[in-house]
Image (cartoon, rainbow, N blue to C red; front, side, top):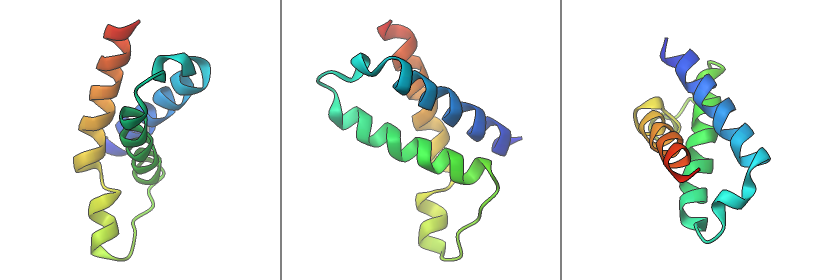
Length: 79
């Protein structure tokens, strides 16, 4: 279930960034964090599990899903 959530959130945020890039004018720090979360969401969403424990933590869903949800809320409140 979390893999599906990760994939849906990552896909939606990717589409929003492609369609409305003007939302990031002046917020490059937010964009960097959100792009990491999207990458982690796709990695987790497709089922890839990194071998090394460090990369499992960096690209795992425990940090990425809350960041992606915060990004979705930020987009919803910003538009």
